[in-house]
Image (cartoon, rainbow, N blue to C red; front, side):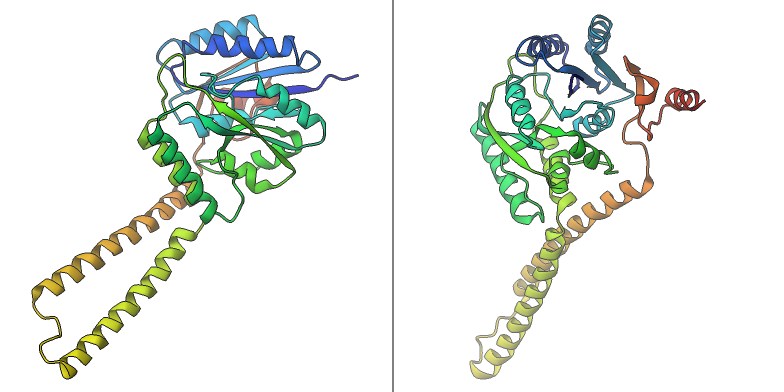
Length: 336
Protein backbone atom coordinates (compact mmCIF):
# COMPACT_ATOMS: atom_id res chain seq x y z
CA UNK A 1 0.00 0.00 0.00
CA UNK A 2 1.37 3.42 -0.99
CA UNK A 3 2.03 5.72 1.93
CA UNK A 4 0.42 9.14 1.77
CA UNK A 5 2.56 12.25 2.08
CA UNK A 6 1.82 15.38 4.12
CA UNK A 7 3.59 18.59 3.08
CA UNK A 8 4.19 21.36 5.63
CA UNK A 9 5.19 24.92 4.67
CA UNK A 10 7.18 27.02 7.15
CA UNK A 11 8.28 30.51 6.03
CA UNK A 12 10.90 32.14 8.25
CA UNK A 13 12.96 35.29 8.67
CA UNK A 14 15.68 35.63 11.32
CA UNK A 15 14.43 32.63 13.28
CA UNK A 16 17.74 31.03 14.26
CA UNK A 17 16.36 30.29 17.72
CA UNK A 18 13.26 28.50 16.42
CA UNK A 19 13.91 26.52 13.21
CA UNK A 20 15.64 23.58 14.94
CA UNK A 21 12.80 23.25 17.45
CA UNK A 22 10.17 23.52 14.71
CA UNK A 23 11.88 20.79 12.67
CA UNK A 24 12.20 18.51 15.70
CA UNK A 25 8.57 18.92 16.74
CA UNK A 26 7.35 18.06 13.23
CA UNK A 27 9.79 15.13 13.05
CA UNK A 28 8.44 13.80 16.35
CA UNK A 29 4.87 14.01 15.05
CA UNK A 30 5.73 11.86 12.04
CA UNK A 31 7.68 9.44 14.19
CA UNK A 32 4.72 9.12 16.53
CA UNK A 33 1.00 9.72 15.88
CA UNK A 34 1.53 10.30 12.13
CA UNK A 35 4.06 7.52 11.60
CA UNK A 36 1.96 5.97 8.81
CA UNK A 37 2.53 9.08 6.65
CA UNK A 38 5.58 10.46 4.87
CA UNK A 39 6.54 14.05 5.64
CA UNK A 40 7.74 16.86 3.40
CA UNK A 41 8.74 19.91 5.43
CA UNK A 42 9.51 22.95 3.26
CA UNK A 43 11.25 25.91 4.89
CA UNK A 44 11.20 29.18 2.93
CA UNK A 45 13.78 31.64 4.24
CA UNK A 46 13.39 35.35 3.46
CA UNK A 47 17.10 36.25 3.32
CA UNK A 48 17.72 35.95 7.06
CA UNK A 49 20.84 37.61 8.44
CA UNK A 50 21.11 35.81 11.80
CA UNK A 51 22.47 32.45 10.62
CA UNK A 52 19.09 30.84 9.89
CA UNK A 53 20.14 29.74 6.35
CA UNK A 54 23.16 27.85 7.71
CA UNK A 55 21.02 26.11 10.30
CA UNK A 56 18.53 25.13 7.59
CA UNK A 57 21.35 23.76 5.44
CA UNK A 58 22.47 21.61 8.36
CA UNK A 59 18.94 20.33 8.99
CA UNK A 60 18.46 19.50 5.29
CA UNK A 61 21.79 17.65 5.20
CA UNK A 62 20.65 15.42 8.09
CA UNK A 63 17.03 14.99 7.04
CA UNK A 64 16.16 14.44 3.34
CA UNK A 65 12.46 15.06 4.09
CA UNK A 66 13.36 18.71 4.76
CA UNK A 67 13.48 21.01 1.74
CA UNK A 68 14.76 24.55 1.84
CA UNK A 69 14.16 27.58 -0.37
CA UNK A 70 16.49 30.53 0.23
CA UNK A 71 15.13 33.79 -1.19
CA UNK A 72 17.40 36.47 -2.65
CA UNK A 73 15.79 39.10 -0.39
CA UNK A 74 12.89 39.50 2.00
CA UNK A 75 9.72 39.24 -0.11
CA UNK A 76 7.35 39.12 2.87
CA UNK A 77 5.66 36.11 4.48
CA UNK A 78 2.74 35.78 2.03
CA UNK A 79 4.81 35.77 -1.15
CA UNK A 80 7.40 33.46 0.36
CA UNK A 81 4.72 31.10 1.64
CA UNK A 82 2.86 30.98 -1.66
CA UNK A 83 6.05 30.40 -3.64
CA UNK A 84 6.93 27.46 -1.37
CA UNK A 85 3.35 26.20 -1.55
CA UNK A 86 3.70 25.79 -5.31
CA UNK A 87 6.49 23.25 -4.74
CA UNK A 88 4.54 21.04 -2.32
CA UNK A 89 4.11 17.44 -3.51
CA UNK A 90 2.03 15.97 -0.68
CA UNK A 91 -1.43 14.39 -0.86
CA UNK A 92 -2.39 17.06 1.69
CA UNK A 93 -0.64 20.31 2.51
CA UNK A 94 -0.39 22.29 5.74
CA UNK A 95 -0.28 25.74 4.18
CA UNK A 96 1.53 27.49 7.01
CA UNK A 97 3.18 26.30 10.19
CA UNK A 98 4.93 29.19 11.93
CA UNK A 99 8.44 28.28 13.04
CA UNK A 100 7.80 30.06 16.36
CA UNK A 101 5.12 27.38 17.01
CA UNK A 102 2.46 29.87 18.08
CA UNK A 103 0.14 27.70 16.00
CA UNK A 104 0.28 24.37 17.90
CA UNK A 105 1.86 21.65 15.68
CA UNK A 106 -0.01 18.89 17.53
CA UNK A 107 -3.20 20.14 15.86
CA UNK A 108 -1.82 18.78 12.58
CA UNK A 109 -2.72 15.31 13.88
CA UNK A 110 -6.37 16.39 14.24
CA UNK A 111 -6.23 18.03 10.80
CA UNK A 112 -5.01 14.82 9.16
CA UNK A 113 -7.62 12.65 10.89
CA UNK A 114 -10.42 14.96 9.70
CA UNK A 115 -8.93 15.05 6.20
CA UNK A 116 -9.01 11.24 6.09
CA UNK A 117 -12.78 11.36 6.70
CA UNK A 118 -13.21 13.25 3.42
CA UNK A 119 -12.96 16.86 4.56
CA UNK A 120 -11.08 18.85 1.91
CA UNK A 121 -10.10 21.90 4.01
CA UNK A 122 -9.36 21.72 7.73
CA UNK A 123 -8.87 25.25 9.03
CA UNK A 124 -7.51 26.24 12.41
CA UNK A 125 -9.28 29.13 14.15
CA UNK A 126 -7.46 31.23 16.77
CA UNK A 127 -10.35 31.53 19.23
CA UNK A 128 -7.99 32.36 22.10
CA UNK A 129 -4.94 34.56 21.63
CA UNK A 130 -2.12 35.00 24.11
CA UNK A 131 -1.39 38.58 23.02
CA UNK A 132 -2.16 42.14 24.08
CA UNK A 133 -5.73 43.45 24.24
CA UNK A 134 -4.95 46.10 21.61
CA UNK A 135 -3.79 43.53 19.05
CA UNK A 136 -6.83 41.34 19.75
CA UNK A 137 -9.15 44.30 19.19
CA UNK A 138 -7.37 45.28 15.96
CA UNK A 139 -7.50 41.74 14.59
CA UNK A 140 -11.17 41.40 15.56
CA UNK A 141 -12.04 44.64 13.78
CA UNK A 142 -10.16 43.50 10.69
CA UNK A 143 -12.02 40.17 10.48
CA UNK A 144 -15.37 41.91 10.90
CA UNK A 145 -14.56 44.44 8.16
CA UNK A 146 -13.34 41.82 5.70
CA UNK A 147 -16.31 39.52 6.31
CA UNK A 148 -18.82 42.32 5.91
CA UNK A 149 -17.24 43.71 2.74
CA UNK A 150 -16.05 40.55 1.00
CA UNK A 151 -18.06 38.59 -1.55
CA UNK A 152 -16.73 35.33 -0.07
CA UNK A 153 -16.93 33.79 3.38
CA UNK A 154 -13.59 34.21 5.14
CA UNK A 155 -14.10 32.58 8.56
CA UNK A 156 -13.40 34.74 11.59
CA UNK A 157 -10.05 34.04 13.30
CA UNK A 158 -8.92 31.63 10.58
CA UNK A 159 -5.40 32.29 9.31
CA UNK A 160 -3.14 30.28 7.02
CA UNK A 161 -2.72 27.42 9.51
CA UNK A 162 -4.86 25.08 7.44
CA UNK A 163 -4.59 21.63 5.88
CA UNK A 164 -5.86 21.39 2.30
CA UNK A 165 -6.40 18.40 0.06
CA UNK A 166 -4.38 18.02 -3.13
CA UNK A 167 -7.32 19.07 -5.31
CA UNK A 168 -7.71 22.24 -3.24
CA UNK A 169 -3.96 22.85 -3.51
CA UNK A 170 -4.21 22.63 -7.30
CA UNK A 171 -6.99 25.24 -7.39
CA UNK A 172 -5.09 27.55 -5.02
CA UNK A 173 -1.73 27.53 -6.80
CA UNK A 174 -3.40 28.29 -10.15
CA UNK A 175 -3.87 31.84 -8.87
CA UNK A 176 -1.29 34.24 -10.25
CA UNK A 177 -1.41 37.05 -7.71
CA UNK A 178 1.49 39.44 -7.12
CA UNK A 179 0.57 39.71 -3.42
CA UNK A 180 -1.44 36.60 -2.55
CA UNK A 181 -3.84 36.84 0.37
CA UNK A 182 -3.64 33.10 0.95
CA UNK A 183 -6.48 32.60 3.44
CA UNK A 184 -8.79 34.52 1.11
CA UNK A 185 -7.70 32.46 -1.90
CA UNK A 186 -8.40 29.22 -0.02
CA UNK A 187 -11.83 30.49 1.02
CA UNK A 188 -12.62 31.60 -2.54
CA UNK A 189 -12.04 28.21 -4.21
CA UNK A 190 -14.79 26.49 -2.22
CA UNK A 191 -14.72 22.78 -1.23
CA UNK A 192 -15.86 21.28 2.07
CA UNK A 193 -14.41 22.82 5.20
CA UNK A 194 -14.22 22.11 8.90
CA UNK A 195 -12.94 24.65 11.43
CA UNK A 196 -10.88 23.48 14.40
CA UNK A 197 -10.53 25.99 17.28
CA UNK A 198 -7.25 26.34 19.17
CA UNK A 199 -5.28 28.71 21.39
CA UNK A 200 -2.70 30.89 19.63
CA UNK A 201 0.15 30.74 22.09
CA UNK A 202 2.58 33.49 23.00
CA UNK A 203 5.96 33.42 21.26
CA UNK A 204 8.61 31.83 23.48
CA UNK A 205 11.78 32.67 21.53
CA UNK A 206 12.61 35.77 19.49
CA UNK A 207 10.54 38.76 18.45
CA UNK A 208 7.60 38.71 16.05
CA UNK A 209 8.31 40.31 12.66
CA UNK A 210 4.63 41.26 12.25
CA UNK A 211 4.69 44.83 13.53
CA UNK A 212 1.68 47.15 13.30
CA UNK A 213 2.52 48.65 9.85
CA UNK A 214 2.95 45.16 8.39
CA UNK A 215 -0.35 44.00 9.90
CA UNK A 216 -2.11 47.08 8.48
CA UNK A 217 -0.57 46.34 5.06
CA UNK A 218 -1.80 42.74 5.21
CA UNK A 219 -5.26 43.89 6.29
CA UNK A 220 -5.54 46.38 3.42
CA UNK A 221 -4.35 43.69 1.00
CA UNK A 222 -7.11 41.38 2.22
CA UNK A 223 -9.76 44.07 1.85
CA UNK A 224 -8.74 45.32 -1.59
CA UNK A 225 -8.07 41.81 -2.97
CA UNK A 226 -11.52 40.37 -2.43
CA UNK A 227 -14.04 43.19 -2.53
CA UNK A 228 -14.94 46.32 -4.50
CA UNK A 229 -16.93 47.64 -1.54
CA UNK A 230 -14.54 50.57 -0.83
CA UNK A 231 -14.96 51.94 -4.36
CA UNK A 232 -18.70 51.35 -4.24
CA UNK A 233 -18.84 53.19 -0.91
CA UNK A 234 -17.06 56.11 -2.58
CA UNK A 235 -19.73 56.17 -5.29
CA UNK A 236 -22.59 56.14 -2.79
CA UNK A 237 -20.87 58.75 -0.62
CA UNK A 238 -20.42 60.98 -3.68
CA UNK A 239 -24.12 60.80 -4.50
CA UNK A 240 -24.98 61.36 -0.82
CA UNK A 241 -22.78 64.44 -0.51
CA UNK A 242 -24.13 65.85 -3.77
CA UNK A 243 -27.68 65.42 -2.46
CA UNK A 244 -26.78 67.09 0.84
CA UNK A 245 -25.15 70.00 -0.95
CA UNK A 246 -28.23 70.43 -3.12
CA UNK A 247 -30.52 70.35 -0.08
CA UNK A 248 -28.26 72.85 1.69
CA UNK A 249 -28.38 75.19 -1.30
CA UNK A 250 -32.19 74.96 -1.56
CA UNK A 251 -32.52 75.47 2.19
CA UNK A 252 -30.27 78.55 2.06
CA UNK A 253 -32.29 80.08 -0.76
CA UNK A 254 -35.56 79.37 1.06
CA UNK A 255 -34.21 80.82 4.32
CA UNK A 256 -33.00 83.94 2.50
CA UNK A 257 -36.51 84.72 1.26
CA UNK A 258 -38.62 83.35 4.12
CA UNK A 259 -36.55 84.30 7.16
CA UNK A 260 -34.25 87.24 6.39
CA UNK A 261 -30.96 87.03 8.26
CA UNK A 262 -31.17 83.25 8.86
CA UNK A 263 -29.17 82.18 5.83
CA UNK A 264 -25.50 81.54 6.78
CA UNK A 265 -23.05 84.04 5.35
CA UNK A 266 -19.37 84.76 5.55
CA UNK A 267 -16.12 82.96 4.87
CA UNK A 268 -16.48 80.40 7.70
CA UNK A 269 -19.14 78.42 5.83
CA UNK A 270 -17.06 78.42 2.67
CA UNK A 271 -13.85 77.39 4.47
CA UNK A 272 -15.48 74.53 6.41
CA UNK A 273 -17.23 73.23 3.31
CA UNK A 274 -14.07 73.47 1.23
CA UNK A 275 -11.88 71.60 3.71
CA UNK A 276 -14.55 68.95 4.34
CA UNK A 277 -15.05 68.18 0.67
CA UNK A 278 -11.28 68.27 0.04
CA UNK A 279 -10.74 65.68 2.79
CA UNK A 280 -13.41 63.44 1.29
CA UNK A 281 -11.81 63.73 -2.13
CA UNK A 282 -8.37 62.82 -0.75
CA UNK A 283 -9.82 59.74 0.95
CA UNK A 284 -11.47 58.65 -2.29
CA UNK A 285 -8.28 59.25 -4.27
CA UNK A 286 -6.36 57.15 -1.74
CA UNK A 287 -8.82 54.27 -2.09
CA UNK A 288 -8.65 54.50 -5.86
CA UNK A 289 -4.84 54.61 -5.62
CA UNK A 290 -4.80 51.33 -3.69
CA UNK A 291 -6.64 49.59 -6.53
CA UNK A 292 -4.51 51.25 -9.22
CA UNK A 293 -1.30 50.27 -7.42
CA UNK A 294 -2.51 46.69 -7.10
CA UNK A 295 -3.43 46.57 -10.80
CA UNK A 296 -0.08 48.09 -11.78
CA UNK A 297 1.87 45.52 -9.78
CA UNK A 298 -0.22 42.69 -11.23
CA UNK A 299 0.13 43.66 -14.90
CA UNK A 300 3.90 44.14 -14.67
CA UNK A 301 4.18 40.34 -14.32
CA UNK A 302 7.39 40.39 -12.33
CA UNK A 303 8.47 37.31 -10.37
CA UNK A 304 6.68 36.79 -7.08
CA UNK A 305 9.92 35.63 -5.46
CA UNK A 306 13.51 35.49 -6.67
CA UNK A 307 15.29 32.47 -5.23
CA UNK A 308 18.96 32.27 -4.34
CA UNK A 309 19.14 28.53 -3.67
CA UNK A 310 17.10 25.35 -3.35
CA UNK A 311 18.11 22.41 -1.19
CA UNK A 312 16.86 18.80 -1.43
CA UNK A 313 14.56 19.59 -4.36
CA UNK A 314 14.50 17.50 -7.49
CA UNK A 315 14.70 19.30 -10.84
CA UNK A 316 11.13 18.42 -11.76
CA UNK A 317 9.73 20.19 -8.66
CA UNK A 318 10.94 23.63 -9.81
CA UNK A 319 7.96 25.99 -10.32
CA UNK A 320 7.27 27.10 -13.88
CA UNK A 321 7.48 30.79 -12.95
CA UNK A 322 10.89 30.59 -11.28
CA UNK A 323 13.11 33.62 -11.88
CA UNK A 324 16.35 31.74 -11.17
CA UNK A 325 18.42 30.95 -14.31
CA UNK A 326 19.81 27.84 -12.62
CA UNK A 327 16.25 26.53 -12.34
CA UNK A 328 15.63 27.36 -15.99
CA UNK A 329 18.66 25.25 -16.92
CA UNK A 330 17.41 22.43 -14.70
CA UNK A 331 14.06 22.49 -16.48
CA UNK A 332 15.73 22.35 -19.90
CA UNK A 333 17.88 19.39 -18.81
CA UNK A 334 14.81 17.63 -17.38
CA UNK A 335 13.05 17.91 -20.76
CA UNK A 336 15.94 16.25 -22.65
